[in-house]
Length: 218
Ligand code: B12
Image (cartoon, rainbow, N blue to C red; front, side):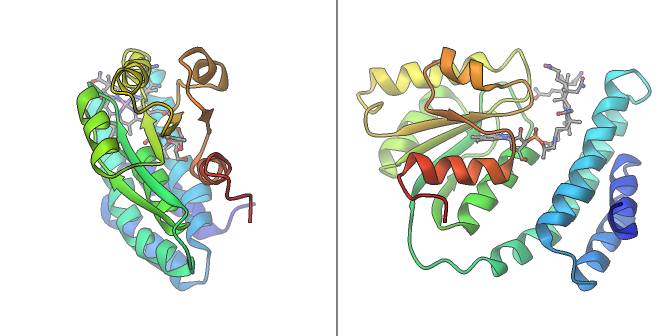
């Protein structure tokens, strides 16, 4: 049974109630609930429920937008706490991350970026709707060890393959590891497009990133 506050957070996000979502999030942190639990057991189930309702036609786009705003506003409260709790001594690697072209889904990508930064990676977040060339130029500019790409739409997943092809064409592919994620993405898709790894959530993304740079699981 999740904590009552976590259930309230989830409900507020699902209902698209921004102020209550933020207030419950603050209350949960003040009550000593771990930031990661606030995300995994409160915010994420809340936005998933909104997505399910959207899919079956109970919710329309404005509902989904309200839920996303409630979630993003609450994430802004959690993020500093998340960072503050991770004491990081060394730099594990440099990550360039973004959501592929044509896709404006930001929440999951930003969560992965935050968790990577909190775990000791230098992170350059390119944002959403990122053109193929921008991934390549940023990888070069920051001498990236990892490139991470998010795609939430079946229609934009192909962009991940295109970025890998562009990295190869630019002669960078043997210098960077590529990881992919997002709701429609799978291990199998990652293999098909020649990525180095796939992770289903932000915690798994950190483990994957550590493995790809040879930093172990510690
Ligand atoms: C919130 C949301 C929106 C918000 C986004 C707001 C924002 N600022 O991000 C808004 C309302 C704008 C939106 C718009 C649209 N959306 Co939308 N959206 C969602 C929803 C409900 C939740 C996504 C989310 O934030 N999840 C929470 C986060 C934490 O999870 P996540 O994104 O999956 O990320 C985690 C993992 O995937 C992984 N991960 C993610 N990225 C990466 C990257 C790397 C490198 C790694 C390793 C891991 C990783 O780790 C993350 C953290 O745990 C999903 C439903 C769903 N089930 O996914 C639909 C969903 C993705 N949307 C959908 C659709 C159709 C749309 C629209 C086309 C709707 C429309 N008719 O206009 C537009 C598209 C606009 C565009 N061009 O991009 C469909 C996609 C269907 C499909 N298969 O293609 C979904 C699945 C809803 C549905 N069931 O129909 N959406």
